[in-house]
Length: 354
Ligand code: ATP
Image 1 (spheres, helix red, strand yellow):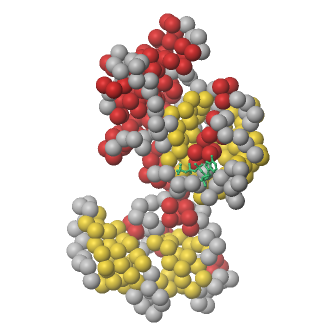
Image 2 (cartoon, rainbow, N blue to C red; image 1 turned 180 degrees about the vertical axis):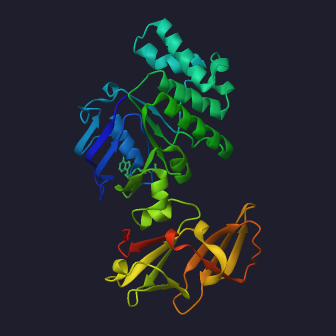
Image 3 (cartoon, helix red, strand yellow; image 1 turned 30 degrees about the horizontal axis):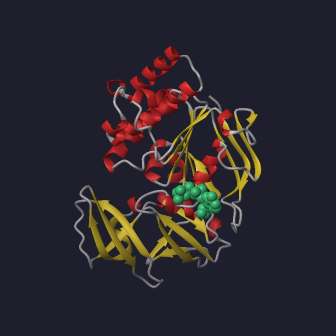
């Protein structure tokens, strides 16, 4: 096992007008589950491929433990990858698929059998060892791909969207299994996904990337509670955080018709600020700001109210997540309020204030 360090790592593809990854500084602790998340094209796969040695590094260094592996070829980095397309050999049994890398590495047969049996036990695949991949479910195939990585006992696991071929229910089940297994094996893991729910539920820490630039790296709860900027605020959480750009008048801010209690030292110099409130932190109340509801989405336990603020300022789109038994119809006016402790404040440059 080992830590992983990206030391100011940059990758610019030939002919590209911006780097796919710009000066990434990121440390993954020994045994940690690190998730890289961000929208399509933000540089997640490029980061993983550089760590695997499949993509050159244009500037900076990558370390595994204390070893600088920037120029080390992939076969000598002691890592194992699980891809979205897990590409099992169709003519081999599960046991042969899982043991193949060890066979190529000329590990003695008895040792291969023992390691495959151990991994199969961990993954609940013991009954299926003699089956061919075509006779397995999608979830079982995914577990064989995990098993193939586990038997190698690498220093680092790299996983690139390993759940994207599974249906929604199986994804939830398998993500819990992977997270649990990783904790049990305590092998340093770097996991790529574009799915923020996957990131938040699996990672010890989550690194959010945008356009090749690291936005924030923190435990899931911290990302949710204290997003470093407007991008992270909007990316983490579903429905996304409400973000209202409002003027600061005499150091004070109003949202629709509601004065918002914020620290005047923070807003003193600002002409405008961005006020953020998560949909789940809005409640229907007697006092607050008025919203004209133009769409109601009933999900059973919760109801999402979509609407526009009313009042002297320009209208802002709002979404509120309220209890499922809240009786509000399209076209109604509701008064929403929130606890000041659940307020997020950003500058117009996007950075968190205070
Ligand atoms: P996705 O979730 O869609 O897989 P990603 O976050 O993994 O996206 P990357 O695949 O790392 O993003 O790509 C980052 C940027 O680099 C994108 O703008 C992409 O178009 C570009 N890129 C990726 N691979 C190459 C390549 N081989 N040649 C040129 N540009 C590339």
